[in-house]
Length: 103
Image (cartoon, rainbow, N blue to C red; front, side):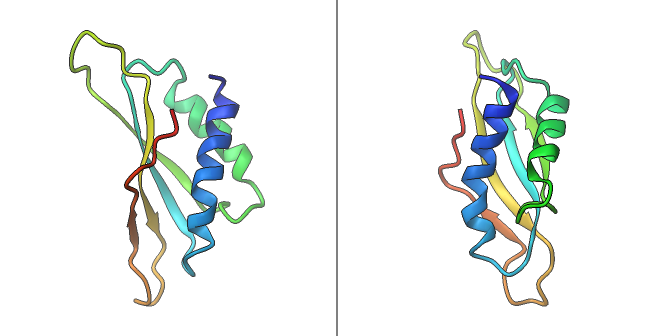
């Protein structure tokens, strides 16, 4: 899948969460399979262009590349959690995502 398509899916997945909290999202924490053809830098740069002047303008991608764990290719991309800027103690600065599968 093209990098722009992946980043658009991430954006569309995370946007509703940004509307549920008063604190802006600071980091979108991703878990990326070791066989994903898109580099972390490509994902980061493409997402930065996409988020510009939107409700996710403050959100950066934090990408954790999974280790090789066997013979099968792992091409999964999953949103694991969202980190929020502090909100004067009114909300949790961290949102765990249960089913954040993008690919």
